[in-house]
Length: 351
Image (tube, rainbow, N blue to C red; front, top):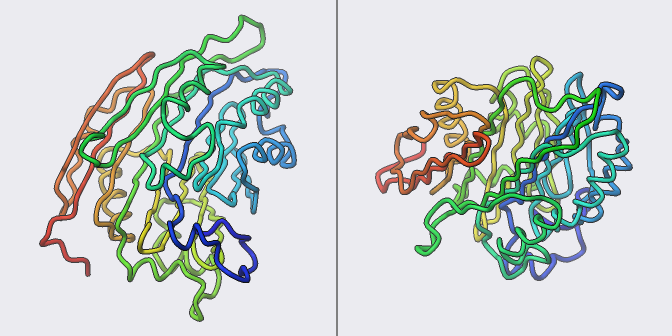
C-alpha cells in the first residue's frame, strides 16, 4: 500500500516506501462509551467533517463512507473507522499517529453526552519500528500516552525475544460519572476476530496492483472471493495507486462489519482481516480457513478479543500449518485475549 494519493499515480515513488516498504500492521483503538437516552444516535450524530478533524491528528483521510441502520463505516487513506452509537473502532497503518487523536475524540464524545466506558489499544509488532512517529516509537511510549487519560494495563502476547510475531494490548475499564438517563454498558457481549498475515503468495498479491488487467475495486473484491466471505455484507472498497487495497463490509442484518487491508509488495507483504460478526466455533474455524485460502500466507496470527470467555478460541488448528505459539489470557472485568501463531509446513501446497 502506498502513502501517495489514492486517485492518481505519483510522478515518482516515495523513496522511503520504495526502499524500506510500507508498514502494513495497524494500530487499533476500540473505545466504548456511555449512551445518552436524550441522544439516541450517540456518536453517529457526529458529522463526517468532524471525524476528519479528529483524523487529522492521526495523519489520515476519509476516502469513502457507507452507512446502514446500525453503524457508519469509513474507508481511510490508512485503514478504517467504524462508528456505532456508543462505540468506535479506529485502525490506522503506515506511520500514522493514532493516539494523537485522543483529545479530539473525547471532545467529540462530550458533544453528544458520551463518556468513556472502556478502551482497548492493540497492535502487532511493527515491521519497521524505527520509522514510527511519536507516540508510537515503542509500546512503553504508547502506554504513557494512554495513561495521560486512562488507567489500565499493557500486555504482550507472543515470542518477543525470538523475533516472532507478537501482539501488544492495552486495556482500561473505566467508571463513568454517575448520571441519569445514561446506558452504561452494551446490551450483549461482543468479540473481535483478527487474522494477521505475512509472507503472502506473490501470485495472490498480483490482484492488488493497478495493472492493465485492473477493472475496479468492486471487481477485485468479487474476483478474490471477499464479496461473500460473510453473509449480508455491503462492501465499500478502494484500490490504491500504484498498489494496495482496502475494503469495509457492513451487515444490514445485524450491524457487524468486516475489513481487509492489503499491502502487496513482496518485501513487506501483509494482510489484515478483522470482523466482529457473531460466529460459533465451527463458523469461526471455517472463516479462518477461507481467509487463509484466499490470501495464502506463509505465516499468520489469529487474535480473538472478547468481553466474555471463549475457551475454544485458542484451540483452532489449520490444515497445512503448525502452531508456533498459543496463549489465552484473562484481564480485568472479564476481558479475554486469545492469540495463536501459525507457520506454513514445508509440504503445504496452495492450489
